[in-house]
Amino acid sequence: MSDGTDVLRAIDQLRRDLSGYHGQLVAHNELQRHCDNQRERIVELEGLYAKAKAERDETAMSFCKEHDRAELLMRENAKLRELVADMWFWSYCGHIDSESQEKQMAHIDSVLKRMRELRVDA
Image 1 (tube, one colour):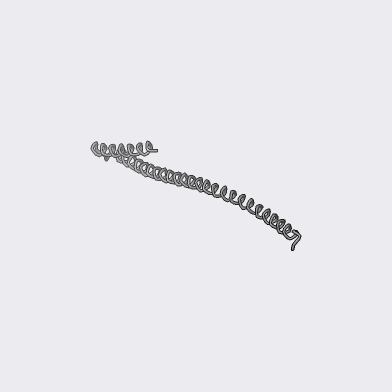
Image 2 (cartoon, helix red, strand yellow):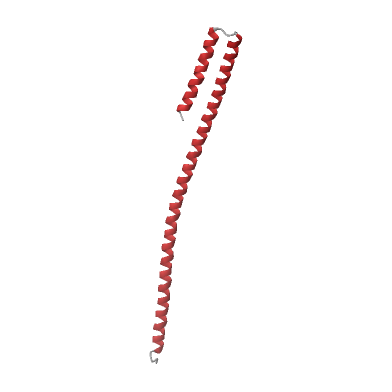
C-alpha cells in the first residue's frame, strides 16, 4: 500500500501539466488574435492598393486623352498655318479669284471651328 505520496506527486504533476497547457492555450489565443488582425490589415491594404491602382489607371487614361487632344490641336494648327500661308501667297501674287478665296476662307473657318471644339472638350 502507498502512503499517498505517489498520489500527491501525480496530482502535482497534473497541476504542472495543466498550468503548462493553460499557458500554451493563452499563447495560442494571442497568436490567433494577432493572425486575425493581420488578415484584416491585409484586406484593408488590398482595398487601398485596388483604389490606388484604379486612380493611377484613370490618371493614365486622362493623360492619354489630353495628349491625343493636344496632338489633334497641333495638326489643326499646322493645317491652319498652311491654309493662311497659301491664301496670303496667292493673294499677294494676285492669282486668287473671289470664289477660290471664299473656299479657302470656308476651309479656314472649319479648321478654326474644329480647334475651338477641341479646346472646349478639355
